[in-house]
Length: 175
Image (cartoon, rainbow, N blue to C red; front, side):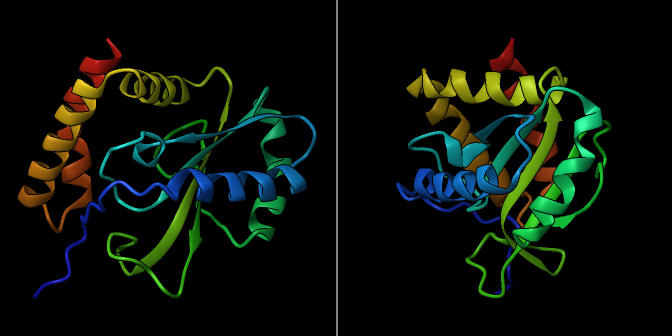
């Protein structure tokens, strides 16, 4: 049986706790000027199937504050990948030697992603709007999960195509 790059785990009630543990660790090492640490992405939406990777937004008031966050985050076991295709964001991933299905991509296994943004970054605003709208609308959650499952079946080995195919739905929910 081939190893699929896109694997959706059933909703897991432990995801919020996994975020809370990581938030506590981050808060203990990050500079006081960090404006917030939020759970974003599909694991932040109760009842939604997701790739089992905890997405975290770390927020700073000014981009000049971002470099002071790199070493503390790296010290918690994360790898910094720079902007990774999104200008004005620093992206980190936390590797694991024991990945669950859905935690490996391109030969790299990871359990958490951190997206470091300024409070006014448009991508952060979109993530929070989408998360909050789905948290408030069970019908949207059901529709999004059905779409995600069909796209995972359509693009089992192409995470980028899977993600791109979800874009129209996400934009529609935000609007």
